[in-house]
Image (cartoon, rainbow, N blue to C red; front, side, top):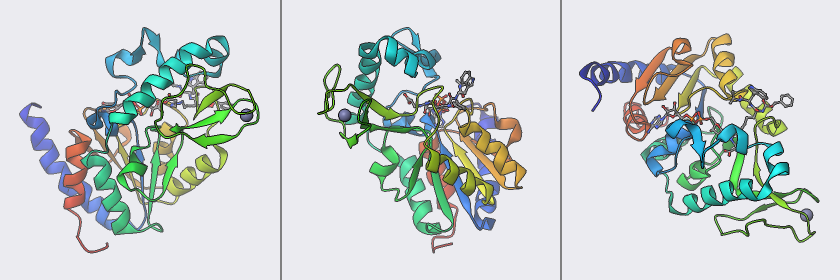
Length: 257
Ligand code: BV8
Ligand code: ZN
């Protein structure tokens, strides 16, 4: 249980956050691994960000894949297997409701997550900055296929014979062009930027918080605890996103805003 000041703070901050959201003409949301924690998916920097003793930054890179593709595929096949059991949680559902309330002209959902849970929850438009674990890309012919969460070989190959890779953005790789531009444009034209479940460590995604502040948008942070960004946000809602996001959306007028 959080110390009492935490709960007090959340009870005070929630109405302030709802007022910011209500007043916003255009809302952008960015999520990180924390919004999928209550769906049972490990975050990156929980457990010290280690996987089988490797730093995630050392496994999720093109160099690691060149050096030891079997190790990298073991990492991704395990995470794909975890997706089979994962279901969207009330935090994902709350963001679907917000999208329905505001409509596509006034709402943009950006995610750093590759777990497909926003789409599974019913979010209509999801800008996936770092790709998606359900897709694979051929290192030869570049073909991209949606393979859902089916079990793949230890070293899966394309029909052209070349090795497949997960269709995710590794460290030191560029983000998908159009998606990055569309995300940056949405944040640069929003009045409210809601950032949920991210440690705000990974760039350029974390830089969107500075973009929002530069254009005078109000920033709301939802997290279990203060993060790198907490000093730059207007309202901090500290609690589990699966509980906080539904409470926040509940405070909004039920008709389309
Ligand atoms: C780029 C896909 C380069 C893969 C991911 C030195 C050398 C080279 C590059 C760099 C460098 N220093 C910095 C960089 C840039 C680098 C970077 O930012 N590194 C970090 C480590 C400092 N970025 C890149 O390399 C990016 N590319 O910069 O291009 C370039 C530039 C020009 C020209 C050519 C190239 C690419 C970044 C994308 C990497 N791929 N994922 C995969 O998933 O396997 S990033 C990975 O981290 C995930 O996508 C994840 O989403 C993301 C961010 O982590 P979070 O989502 O924030 O998760 P985290 O665990 O950190 O935090 C969870 C939070 O949730 C916590 O705050 C916790 O408190 C909270 N929480 C937990 N439970 C809950 C909760 N909150 C609410 N409720 C709960 N229940
Ligand atoms: Zn191929």
